[in-house]
Length: 256
Image (cartoon, rainbow, N blue to C red; front, side, top):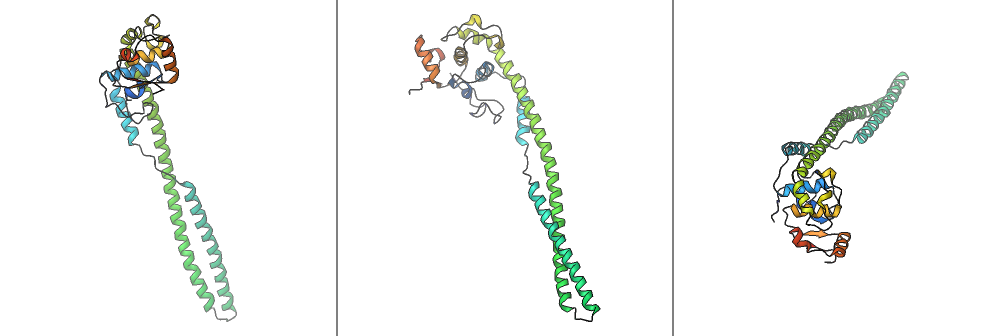
């Protein structure tokens, strides 16, 4: 059998790729996922596409393009509070020194030292006012970034919801397309029974293990397929047939 290696990365349960890799979904038994996902993976491996694939790819591209910047409002608030406090302290110092200058002049005392202190404090105040204005501007920018970030996060959540809906639509469409082949494959796998499969995936009432094996049987994957301990024990107890022959792929067991 041949594998389709262009349908995404190994993590079939994430949005890292718009379409999951069939090998990742069907590479172990039990698969740990739903029948529809198993059958959709089998359909993908056989080259089938869904009518919503282009929309899925477009939504995925939009999601990938969204960048949510880091926002640090708390630091910006602290910086403004510190700058405002320093400005206030220096205003009080300048006011006190002006009073000192007036008092010295009132008694004909030399105000030179007080004037020098006043000039120095006024320069510090001017610098503090500049720092406070810069801190206000920084906080304004961070608030604007925070608002933009909220918008982007809401957009991302909406896109993820939309992507999830379209992916469910794709799985349902693909699963239904291969369901006749799946029903037929049930007669060839341990524990399978086509008589209780029904006409659609939602009507399937048989064994989950048999369903996984049947999905793998109709898929075109290279394998190997890994048996988990519970599945290996169940199949060993039945001892019905060679599983590699049934599935058409190499099978690894937990004791190997």
